[in-house]
Length: 324
Ligand code: NAD
Ligand code: AKB
Image (cartoon, rainbow, N blue to C red; front, side, top):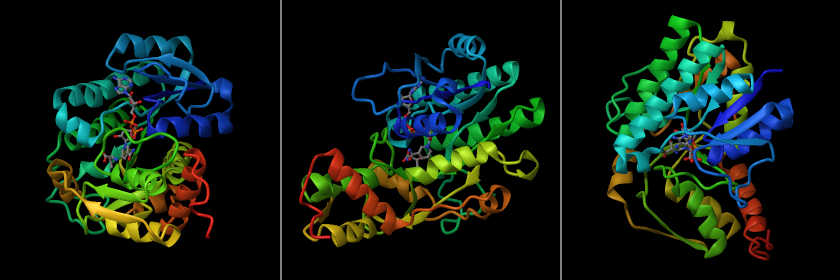
């Protein structure tokens, strides 16, 4: 079997995708890579790990050729809030990094999975049940790189026959690796603080609805799409996918069902609030459902219960959920 390479594998998605891919295809067939060295505390499975900066095209080509890579899950990127503070670096990593991956994929006949985001939409797109195909005029550097990335992947498929596929992920919620500096990070932080201190100060205001998804569904989406029958895929590189549309006070109320003393306050970060306000409230993911059978498992109640249980164990906090 050709090997599977994950770029940006030490991030929020990569650590969990690596385990899932090893389980499905065998540990010997998965190579994890990242620009930063692996630390003892990284919760990544023990597969081969190779340092790789995706902005170094020679480095990408060497690994793909040497290890006979056939599939690349390209996750290396800067997320929305970080990208707004470092737009030039974000362009370099998100765009040039993707371009080098696609060029190597063209040369060595690899298939490529690249996530886009709800950040690929802007204020002028319909905000409720945002359609699969609609106007995309994002106002952030992150969004600019995501739209351009979707188009570039489409181009490499049409022009060179590279098997490119991708989804527009919503905010992802998980307990293994912390998110890397996005606008939806509050939806992870809130669970950590609920367990640690039973209070949280949210940087987005009440009523800010955004789509979210629990990590097991996000991992399932990536693998399911890469295994889908290509003849059925009309929207290869930018499938809307979602599990739930929620606002901060909605998660807070759900947490209070398990931790009645939990309190939430607000201190709005104007930069991340402006980004969130420009993003959809909810996506229409019917194309993904029709073309490759996308169907999420976790809604808010199941996700919140699982997050609180897993994080209590991870943070070694006993008794907090004992009344359940
Ligand atoms: P993350 O920030 O947690 O991880 C990204 C990883 O990329 C980090 O480990 C970082 O060290 C690495 N990286 C940065 N620059 C690099 C470079 N030059 N070369 C190699 N590695 C580099 O991000 P994530 O949440 O795992 O996101 C992965 C992909 O999914 C990104 O394209 C992101 O835009 C997309 N996405 C994520 C979410 C989410 O909520 N997590 C939502 C929508 C889309
Ligand atoms: C971010 O907030 O930047 C990401 C995303 C939704 O793309 N979580």
